[in-house]
Length: 168
Image (cartoon, rainbow, N blue to C red; front, side):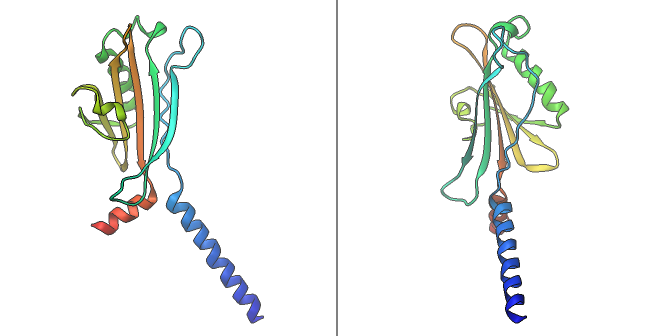
């Protein structure tokens, strides 16, 4: 009987440890779905996307980064004539999804184009009630006509949150 209780106790400890590890490092990518018309050829607006984990040398945990890139060629050229038109469209949808504008022109590693664009090239947004998530919207002119658009979200891992709390 004692051996059985020891086995149950060891199994319970292992199960709790596995759950803790999963919760500590489980991905928390933020996928923002904004409806954008498809290109005339049928291709999706966001033609490039990737999910990455961004880690800094001086801190533990990661940021879960989801980045989508598209362009306004063909179908959108009639309605999106300026960068302000593109921003207005996306900001309307972001507001409906609960995102609020924070600052323009910030340079931040999850959005690599932010280091190359001018003050109005990248805008940062936040979600009230979720201080762990940020969103970067970048718009810049294409070489020919239209605009490139990058929508990037960054969400702190549970590990990062724990270590930030311990640093305070």
